Length: 82
Image (cartoon, rainbow, N blue to C red; front, side, top):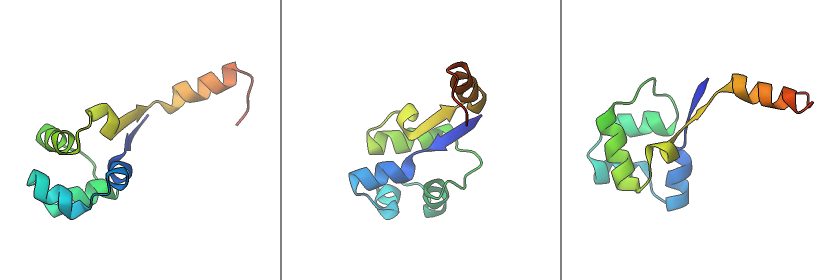
């Protein structure tokens, strides 16, 4: 299983910098930088709320859940190989 963080993609699409996010949310630059580089081990609900509100996205747009086992089974069931 894997959680995919889309913050850097969203910022690129919206042409926002990490500093723009810091100014708009009040979150610490270290928090934003770690999320941007996908180095965070955990994110609290308040941080997710502030990011979603500022960026105008949902949690599902910001973070994506992928179950690698399910993807592997789906590929195998269709007769495809990796």
